[in-house]
Image (cartoon, rainbow, N blue to C red):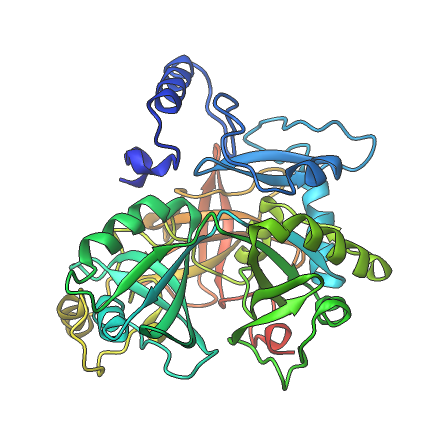
Length: 438
C-alpha cells in the first residue's frame, strides 16, 4: 500500500499536496511510463550542491520531495528524459556512469537518506526489541537490521552504527531509506519509551551524504582525510567520524548500495559544497565522474540487493526475501514478527527470492512481470533493469520454493512477449564481495 500512503511525498504542506493532487488528476487519461518524473511542485527540497550538479549535466528526478540526479547528460546531449517502455535515450549514458564507478571512481549525492540518532541508557534494549538482527556492541561497528510486521514481513530497514558513548549513555546512528522517512519516523516516535530512557532525534536535514565508490575511491579519500583509511585501519562494515578536507567531522561509513569499494560520507550540511569541490578535485587524476540514481539501480541489481518498498514489502517475509542471516532467533529480545517467522520455518517458506537473467533485446523488465515455469505462473518480479557491468538484463523477484532452483529455465513476460530466462546465482557481480572488502 506504499503507493497510496500520503506519507510518501515527504513535503507535508497543504499547498504542495494540492499541487500534486491536481497533477495526478491531469495524468489520469494519459500513458504512464516506467521511471516517469512529474514536474509540478519542484524543486521542493534540494541539496546545497544542486547548482554544481546541475552544471555537471544532471537530469533531475524527485524522491520524497528531494531533488536527485537520475543521470548526467554529457556536453552536447539534450538534458531530457524521452519516456518509453523500451530502452530510452539515457541507456548508454547510464552505462557510462556504471563503468565510471565500477572501473575508476564515482561520486553520488544521496542526502535524501533518512538519518536518526538514538541514545540513552535504554537505547540498546529498545532497538534490540524492535529489530530482528543483533544491535552492534563494539564502537564503530555497524549492521543491517530490519523492523518487522507481525507477519514477519519488513516494516523498516536501517543501517545501525554504534557510536562512542555520550552524556546520556550508548549512542546509535540509524540510516534508512529516504522515501520511508515519514513512515519510519511515525513508527519510531510511537514506540519510543516515554520514561526518559531513550532520546530520539531526526538528523535527516542536518547531514548531507555523498557516496564515493570505485576501485580508486581509497586513493581519492586518502588525499583529503586526516585518518587511516587503509583496509586494515578502516575495514568493511565500520564507521567513524574523521576530518575530511575542511570538515572536521565527516561520519564515514564503509558501506554502500552499489557493491564496490567505497564510503558513505555523512557530513554537516553546511560543508557540502566544499566537500563536493574537494572530492572532485582530488579525483580528477583518476577521472572521477558524477553518478546518478539510475546507474545506482543498475549496480544494485547486479548485486541482488533488495530495495525497501518493492523487493522488501508487506507481502513477503524476511525469510522469503533470503535475509535469514539478518534474523537472530536466539537473541534475548522477543522482536516483532519472531513467532510468525518460526512458524514459517517449521511449515516451509513458500517463496524464494531469486535473481533471473532474461534474454531481452531493446526492452528490460522493471518489476511486476510474471515468471512462468513449465507454462504456468510460478512467481513475479519486484524490480528489474539492465546490469551494465555484467551485460545482462536482470529481474529480481519471488518464485515458488518448489520451482526456485539455480539454473532452472523459465520465461518472463516483457511487454507483449514471453522472453526466455533462467534463474541464476545471487549477485552476478562479485558474489564473494571481494571489491567491498578490498
